[in-house]
Length: 279
Image (cartoon, rainbow, N blue to C red; front, side, top):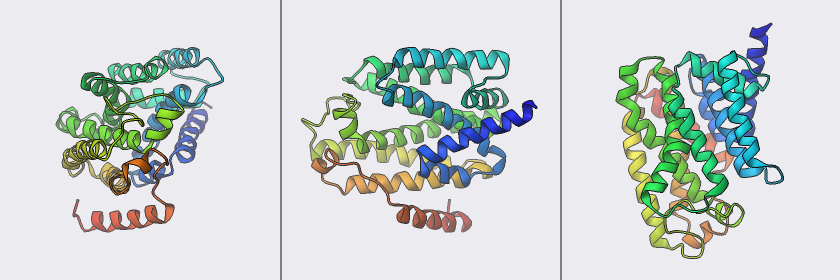
């Protein structure tokens, strides 16, 4: 039955989320059950595209990402795909009216990773962040607001700023791997050869501004989404604090992480804060 295949497809997206990001997986579990599958499907789609351009070094990445895009549109047109990740995502796109401009902006940034190694201006940097992160926040907001366009428009800016904050934290955390393995530099004018404490401080200040604005949107989210998004926010804020307290030269030599023990504590703290209606 098609419904059984669809159920298996969403479970595959959930499995992708669980295996690639324990933190995000925990945050999704804090969402209402009614919207979890949709968020899993969004994560599965963006993760697979990201893996193509970041990890599949022994294969023709350009062909793979182009085929992935073609198969996505084929799935949208047919209403089915034998790729379970694409099958679940196309269901979510249709159910929550995720507009094609968001998908195209995301794929554009992914394709840039195939040919572009540095972002030398703020315009280039902002354009990449918009496609790789901001639109993912907007896709999720489409799910959270369930067709309430007024609510969606009210929270768009905050959702984009949260996506930006998450992405910039990832960039700072992955500075070493991006530079040495992927030969990429996302922050304008910054690489491992000239990275300084002052540069780190400037980046963190920018991220903190993003988080401050994003928080204003989190408190206005529908009840089904608020706790899950707040949980992800708390995790990333903790990671940013660790980066802030790490000397700049260590960021360039190691990958900073939040331990599972700390994550469990943050989850408990977030739950208490949420239940006391402090967010």
